[in-house]
Image (cartoon, rainbow, N blue to C red):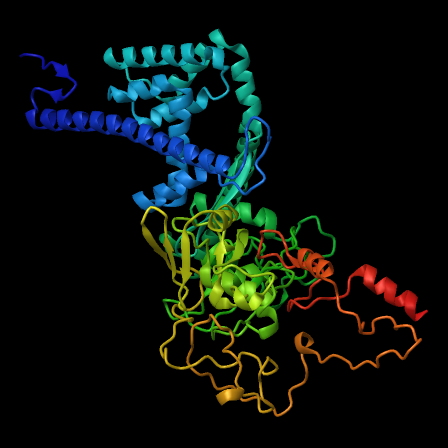
Length: 612
């Protein structure tokens, strides 16, 4: 009997496995070498963008020897390089940021790791793990630390040792302690400032809520949730046994909540279920057929603890905002859309409402342009109703490759708004607005790409390098709600009190008709809405009161129209006051829900003093 000798490819008794293993190893080596080449190529792209931005700064008059910061708008070379990777490579923006950040970090700070990748023996994930562990090492010791850990790791692999993640990090910490004892302490102190909680949309009505906490906090929270889940599992089991002894129907095994489900339910119950210490409980909470968590009915149906808590006050005051859309979902049920969580089921909505102190329900019109008015179209500020419609339509940032939720983004004019002459610029209407995150809002405003928004919401972007990119709305708004099935039909006037409307509220025709409003909006099919003969004036279009001009020698009354027009300087100052910052989506606090201006506190006080 002979003993088979092992080798890296496998066993001599299995030549097929040995050949396949050798081929896989060669492919892994090639992948590591290609990853190193990609890192160097991405970093070269970043340096080219940095040189180009420096050339633009110098052309704009910026002198780095004299000026601390340039006086013109500057786009970070990192963001330009990310946009180019998205346009050329076809990945999403987060992936491009990861590629570029890793390339810049490894090439500039940890070149020894990149050299080890180029030999094929070190993979990219391990290199990123080592780089993160060495991020706080002093630059004077960084080179020696990375060379020593690479020598140790390569020697261990050559000797047949396969160290795991914890062994690699433990050895690296010992090496860092030998060279730079303060580096480990600095890294641990910096780690506590990286705590965060993130929400990420999922599919099938689910979402991911992740928390990055200290080890003590995370383990304590987990133990509390696990204890609550274990106790609830015991209660559910006892309730099922009691129901079985009583001859009642029992649940199938697949409908019994697992320990993972119970931990998740315990986390939700800690925030949304009624406060057990609340003394405002009224007698008879279980009346009317409502079962508590300890009753067999609750265990049989698998509902969460406290989902029906009578009049008890919830631990956290929740008042959700719900948007009702007319079209049904894919399964024929009403579709529910949460601003940050995404699509949800109607059952999840009912359960959320049962744990809420109220809700704000909105039912938007599905017809395109219903929030557009002649007055708000010539204002830079966006009304609350119009902003809500744009977020429902787009869902996320519309820039190619970006997926930032619409609730965290700005609303940008695709065709720039002209503050001096609004009629000659892009109007504040649904057909000219799109969701942009702050980074891509600035990128669109100050970079050289071209943007075009189609009537159906399709955004076409042409880069300065010749790429043509297209994005489509991903929000819950009905698909094709802004489409125009009849391009030959002119757009009707969107508001009966708008400019150029006749007494019967139809747009004038012939030579008396003014320029089509909005002049740059695409035509839409006719919509027949019966209008009353004399509609009441709306706050947006309230007729101005006629005032008597002051007689000779009479002082002009407070609030009366002045006969002398404003000077050019006053008009410019007024425009500067009205021109907001770069954030298009914000509605100022002095404006009402419809975008109309309401008197400020100082103005109201002045009026009261004059009336006295």
